Length: 129
Length: 447
Image (cartoon, rainbow over all chains, first blue to last red; front, side, top):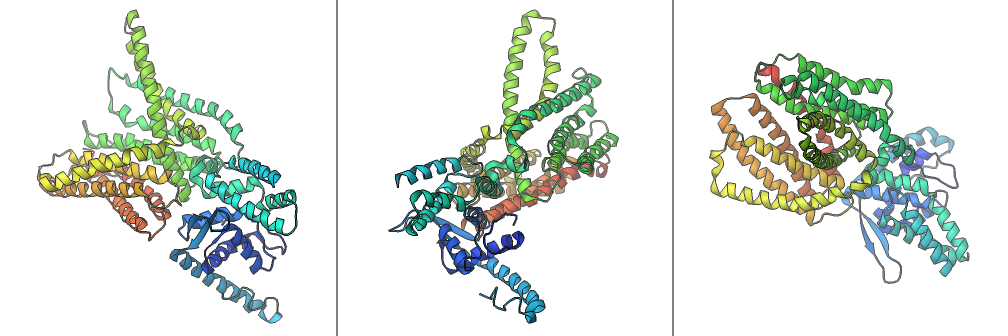
């Protein structure tokens, strides 16, 4: 991932942000299919407003996941509402998410091992969700 | 709300102009913008305020456009290759570089022709070196254009120097079959050598490899167009000068044709680089037009061959014909892959293409079976080894492509995998062509 995501709020390293964007979006889509605006709202919600990225940047990322076959997409107009492009996760996407999860958990555990006692990082911060 | 609608319409038009962003993207961003505005409206902002905040949150258009272009490199692949440079500045200075390299290629070709006393004499070395007279200038053009450093210049030049030494030092027999093979395969090897400077001194990137495939396809179209125009010009010139007599017309063709053909190689490359959008839609149109026609022809041929069982009566040269057929089918496959929007779901065109590939495979297997049996009787000659090897290389590629395409059509893999198969396979073609040029002559004692 080489994208330049601009984050507001907590000052998080750009590379870390870029690396976490894919699992975050995949995890949100694993909950339920969704469209861009709603995905972004969910990101804000999950991070308590600390993480917020330039809205437009979500779309090239979604298109990348689409090309890799991790998600499928469909234009749909709900009964009350405007025409939106919905994304749903595929089996390949779930497999990729599981792999990413494994890597993140490993990293978190390693960091937690070092920082754990000093209370720097709450054990559940990145969660096994 | 009217004021906001106007503002949104203006914003839409502005975004739509950004390179790399297409109509569907604008629709998607538009829906996003409206959602955002609606929410801000509900929070009590005025229409104007809501619009301004929503646009600001969307992010700056340059960065956004670059992200889209990075993801959808097929939409504007030239931007990726010319990264970081101002496009218009490039286009205006580009023609002079291209002209210098084209002129150099034309002069090199003319000097060689004069030295060989062509067409009064027809020395083998001239035909052997045709690729070496032109393609180094194309490689040089790209090395210059991509601003390669010294180390990469050397690496780009190395294959040309090595191959020039190899083919000119090989002691070919008179009327040698391997010499003709080398003359045929050397330009192919050199074309792959051009890929290195074309891709800016990298070979690993699959996206760049796909760019090179696109470039090759577009280059063929441009070259054919230039050749047509050049042919008309030459024919008219000859007719106009004919009354003057004294063989002026013949001299003119002798001088103009080789240099023109050599210079056109670089000019066509320059056109692909800088005026790429002119023919941008040619690739999809040509593939859509010819894939069904080839599918019909190939299916009919496969059915007839299978039913009539003529498999035993194949002529010795037929394998060459089938090699050419597989090359064309592969060209259609590559062209349609490079022109396809990867995210589009499988459509009827993908099925038609699979039918064409599958029929070509069946046909080829029939012929191949017959040929292998014949070679057992007739023995191996350089021509048969080269034709057989090429056939196998193409067969494996198309079989892989057909298999992946079945999996894609049944929804088990993403289109991306087909693309990756082709870009990963490209080195195999280069290696096979290099083998024919370098290894085959000594193996057959330069016969």
